[in-house]
Figure 1 (cartoon, helix red, strand yellow):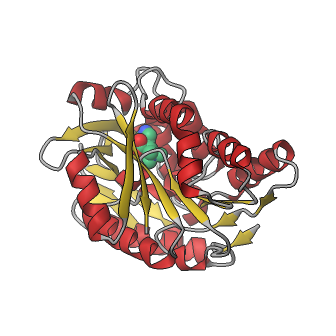
Figure 2 (cartoon, rainbow, N blue to C red):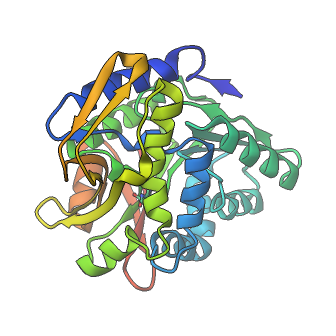
Figure 3 (cartoon, rainbow, N blue to C red):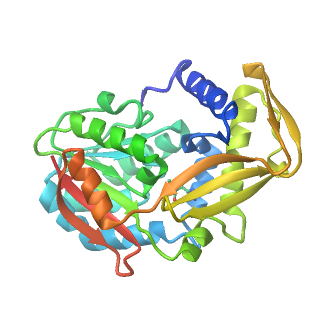
Length: 317
Ligand code: AVJ
């Protein structure tokens, strides 16, 4: 595994995000810190919830369109950003293998445990495939990813929606700058829909999403010797109709003063005060295609599932 988060990197990045996020108003944290081994497992459980439709919709699209994606991309290297458990990836790998072009798979994720497990599983399933896992932050390390071969860069699941509009613009431009003629991008995006369905997808009755949300406090407790009581925070999911994004928050049930010892900092929460832990933007066709073309991509295909809930965009450079 190539590790760009090794040594002190991860710890310093978490320190600076926690320091910045907990000293601003409102308090906030970037969603990448959900994904330690436990958080990645909780997210995998979310994808199997009845209310969480994006994964099933994207699978439906991939089942129908992976052959088309393989034929258009003719890629020998699949680079997957935020690969997690790589469950949907097999559809792309099968199609690229059937097309006869596939040589290498580069899963990119922040969690080493999840990454190694997925890489091992796929190396066994695809004998002869060159599996090269990279532990990296896709907002920081795009330029360091392998650039050999004809690449299909897949960014699935709607994770692009976790970036603020400004960060998204920067990300797409940086990604475009690392791509060469012949490379393609396959981008998953969740679409604007009935707010009740959106909120239900982020606030399941079994509390799996709540546990996932609170997991970020466990990560901070462990990594920064902090003393958060996860159960003292209520899971909040709401849809912001103006910005067209879901927000997840953790709401302090009572006033609290929480030491974050590694930072020499105490985070003070008033009763009901919220910490924003995630935005998950929902897209419209014109908006997303506009963003892609302003970043320098040439959109080739717009695929949706039969219900029109989720989109995959295939773009060339
Ligand atoms: C993995 C970023 C696509 O935003 O829907 C699921 C994460 N958060 N439930 C999303 C998530 C709460 C998910 N992504």
